[in-house]
Length: 428
Image (cartoon, rainbow, N blue to C red; front, side, top):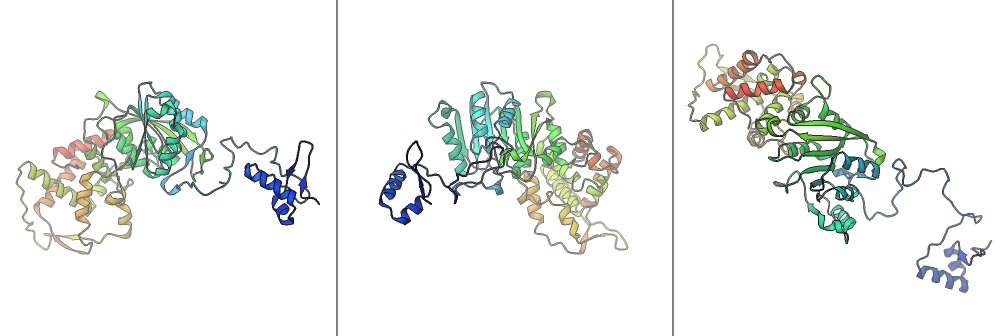
């Protein structure tokens, strides 16, 4: 069978390689003519039938269509840092619409990726400040507006938004958030001296549910208390994983965060509030008494901080050992069990938790040098005083000793912090 065809419209080829191998000079010349003009040559089957796409296959533009395999490996998405590009334009438009942008707004976008959200934000806002960790993505989003009027209104910052000490002033934050920085990003936005008016953020579904969980819910945690204490949290919509390229392994949700402003904004220190909550939620199923009085690490932390507070306020301390009989002057310290390490994960693992307050980082860095062995330690009067202060706060003042953190609301925690401060116990 011939390896070339001649339809009515002119001459074209099916198998240029076969033509070259047969060394037919006229055919070789025509194939070379096609290659010089970079015209695609169609492939044929053994019977000369063209391979056509199926009629009923999903359109490539559909957000639910299976992503086609890349034809080259030049640009790969790094899913290890949460690179899942939002490809559905309808979802992108809905996210921007829920931000209720003003023409005078400056928007901070975290992780712009290839710019699918960025170009839609630029249609509504005055300026976009895009913070991107990957230089390749930063170049891609820059290309989207190159040579266009929007180019002057886009500022791309290369770096890790969590590690940036200062951020430019902005009014709104919009982000298809890399899931690895979800918690640090929320805490960073809420703890800013001048938080954004509103943040519309894409998160993993479970993380979004934790943000909106109420006391008694299975997902209620420190994140829930912090977010709802400092802001109004609204779940906007669910987003399926087929709306991303490459698709993540989990479903997503979009939430709207509106920080409390003016008289509604709590008048307490963010670091101190969050520091106290870390102790309360060491294990959310434990009673407050067990969380505060049943842990050597917590008691030691409170004692060291109390000493600092006394030194700053020129309050003398009686640091003599207790003179008790029958060996009662010694306090036995047990070796932490295997589950204790899991229990304090997130409480003392400061290197892995970027949103940890500086106070915890400093104290826990010192404590990691102490050997965790069974032994005896002389109990001082200061240590006994700390235990008594904590007992008084939990049992006499707040009546929260037998209550579990997972059942407490923000008013309970606010009363607890106020009572601790009255006793000279601080957490920042």
